[in-house]
Amino acid sequence: MLTVVQPPPGGQGGRAPARRPYHRSRSLSFTTDETRRLRAALRGLKARLGTWRAVSAAMGGVHARTLAGVACGIGRGSPALVLLAARVAGTTVERLLSPPAAADRCPTCGRSG
Image (cartoon, rainbow, N blue to C red):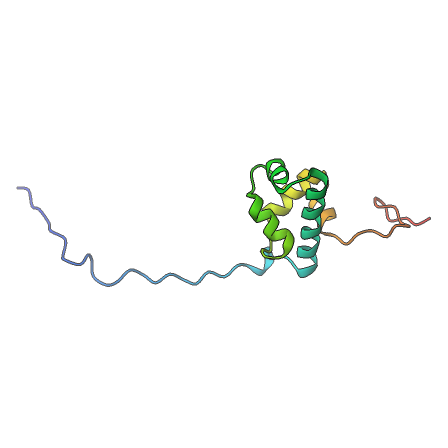
């Protein structure tokens, strides 16, 4: 014989579980120096390509407002944005985020003179 079970009114009792607060991992956040270098790199790409739309197209469709916001200090950027900027600039992520080399040293080996 078929028995139909009716769910109790109000669901299975109790409320929905509370959402845990979201905290961004510190290991995925940039230091202030790295953020400053990312901003400088984005401004350099804009100077080279002309407009934020051109930079956006070169980066694969990142919104131009996002790029402009990060470049002027509104946003902090993300590791994915650094990776895309490095690809467009034709360099590595490490070189993009590291301090600039001294002018009297070789950028590859660090030898002076």
